[in-house]
Image (cartoon, rainbow, N blue to C red; front, top):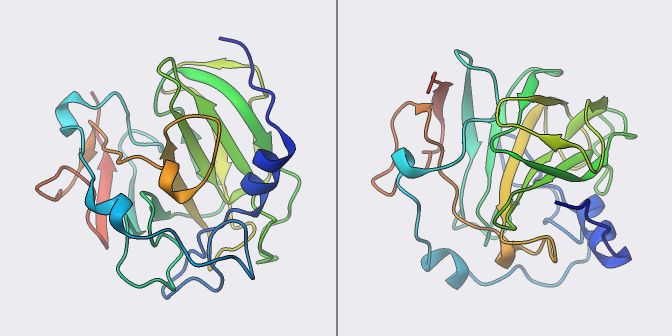
Length: 220
C-alpha cells in the first residue's frame, strides 16, 4: 500500500481536530475548532451497526495486561461535548503511555511537534494508520516527539507506534481514538462504530465500550 499524500484541507482538519477531553464538556467543538458551524446531526449515530467484538479485527491500542478508563464515548447527547455526532473513545492514561497498532496498516499521517499541556485547539499531535480495507484509525493528543513511526511505514498489529500525551484541545493526559471510513475526510460523519476483540470489561449490548468503565487489554 502506498503512503497517502493528503491535501491541504485534510491536513488542516486533522490538525484542528480535538476532543476537549476532560471530566466535563469540551471547551470548543471538534474540527474545525472555535467558530465552527453547528455539529453534524445525531442521525449519523442512530444508524450505527457495531461489529461483534469476537469478530472485530481491532485490538485495544494500549499494552496487554494494562487497563484504562473510557471517559468520553460515542455520540453523547449533549452538543457541547466534543464527541457529539461522532464515534470515538477517550481513555484516561498517564503521559507517555506506550500505544500499539490496533491493526495492520500503513502510516499516512504523523505529527508530534506540539508541546503537552498548552491546551490550544489545533495543537493536537495525531497519528493516522490506514488499513487494507481503506479505513483509517486515528490516535490523538499524543505527546511531544512521541511518535515512533513515520509516514509510509508498514506496521503490524501490536507494534509500538506512539506514546500518549496531553496536546491540543485536551483537559488532561489521555488518548483519543476514532475510526474513519477512508482517508478523504476527518468529518464526524466519516467516523465508524469501533469495537475491540480483546477489551476486558463490561460492554454494551452492541459491543461498544461503556462510559466510565475500565478496560483491560487482554491477550488474544
